[in-house]
Length: 78
Image (cartoon, rainbow, N blue to C red; front, side, top):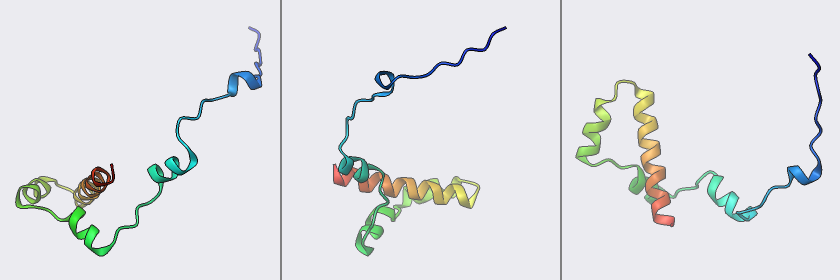
């Protein structure tokens, strides 16, 4: 058996750029919420609180609330 090493030319490594640098930063940067925004995005109504209470582990509850809050914040910025 012969092992061949292949080199990738510059032509093969070029990629298209869909997002600008500022769009990439906006998408992946950590959010900076004000106190009011935190209260709005991370507060739970009674139905959501019931759902959170069904989750067994504290870590899972926290993760769910964080995802919910970040989802709420993203829908407001679109």
